[in-house]
Image 1 (cartoon, rainbow, N blue to C red):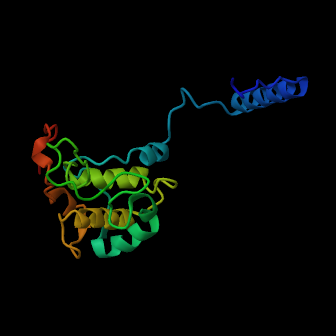
Image 2 (cartoon, helix red, strand yellow):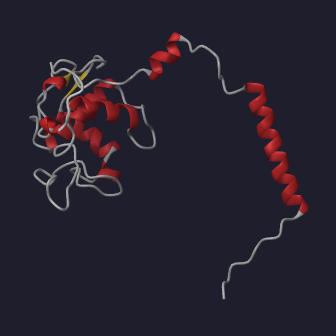
Amino acid sequence: MSTFRRRRKTPCGLLSGLLGVIAMATVAAQEGPGLGETPSPEMLAAWDIDIGPDGSGLPAGSGTAAVGETLYMTNCFACHGPEGEGLLNDRLAGGHGSLASEAPRKTVGSYWPYATTVFDYVRRAMPYLMPQSLTNDEVYALTAYLLYINGIVARDEVMDAETLPDVEMPNRDSFVIAYPRR
């Protein structure tokens, strides 16, 4: 027999819930969702942060894996492990030659086709609890570190808007090319 019991809804509980819904509706009616309003150039600029495979959209800044390692230990280690081997979240390093196996490991070094995609993702979505909180220099440094732990760039190699698009990722030719290469 189940030990689950239904909670009875009391008048106080129903009233409290109803007042909460009314309060939210009042706030929404006052502020509105902004539908139909033309966004300002500043709002558009804040949303328009995508980076193309050819490097289009890369901002000014630069970084190396040496600098990125310290940032990684501060911002990424807890979820991705000391050298990207994965903990709570995905593995970031290794997996070379595993894609055709029965247990493929899709990592930055084994799967991702463009180094610019790494920059774009880190800039847009990381660190997990504070996305878009890193400076461009920090994102370049973290990208360089991720490429370094995958054996793709040297520890002191500078990643910036000029060098990052030229990085040849190991799995680059296994994807359909939708953009012309540089």
